[in-house]
Image (cartoon, rainbow, N blue to C red; front, side, top):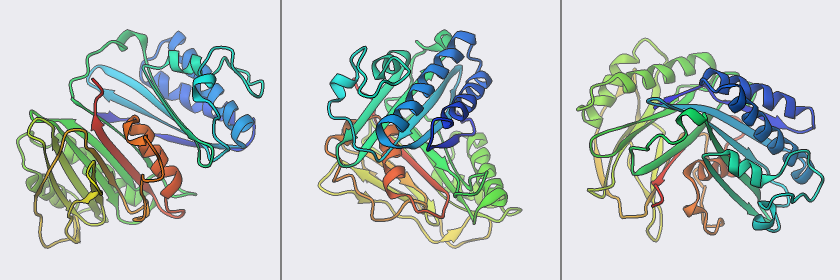
Length: 339
């Protein structure tokens, strides 16, 4: 899976809608969306930005491009901490508007999207995920039994993110990489992006320990990075995990989250030990991986029913509510694809 460079736009006044629209349509054009599909993207993001101002007093919109083989999509997240939606069912009905918004409502956004999800509480605000595809590949088959989604956002004031992530299919499941380049800015991004490329181009039969060693050797000319790889095998009900540095990994689904083990070190500089650990993956489990841009005190206990949401929406909620204010952050979530 190739990931396009994401964008984040703070929506604090009506003029921000134009910036969101410009960024989203430009990204859609790079994916080969035709004129009609780009117009559909413009309508969706304009409605989302307008809703943030009129209903929530502002928020953020995040977008990223994803390419899986011949299938391209644009993922849009709208996040706010406003008063929430009183009735999501009513808000999704055609013609519904509580503040005279310019678009045709959440129902139209849902119809325009190949995937759509929403989570809203009166106390915590609203998160909306819309995944848009070019109509030419909208019906492409999905090969994996897992849905994997995430985000990487730079430290405020930085243009480049020192974190990144990616994943790739294996014969047994999905292998997911999260990388945190040392520090911030362009040098950290250089290390993270090189690690991502080494992972994507690495041999398909390499073990996780061999892959991390490949990253370690390949990052010697950079400032170095922390990284972890989780290989989820749904049929065998197993997760294999290996990490070096401050990447955190958790399996959700039991009575309490199960933390996975990473060893200390910096890939490219000092690594004393690379070790693989195997954990059970009971049916219905959810995986969360994140850099240290997310606080270690995060929890989904205060979000009833959220575990059934799209993993991209869960990642967005964790980012919104638990990110550190002065760091790059990456959050990746994997969960079973609904039948």
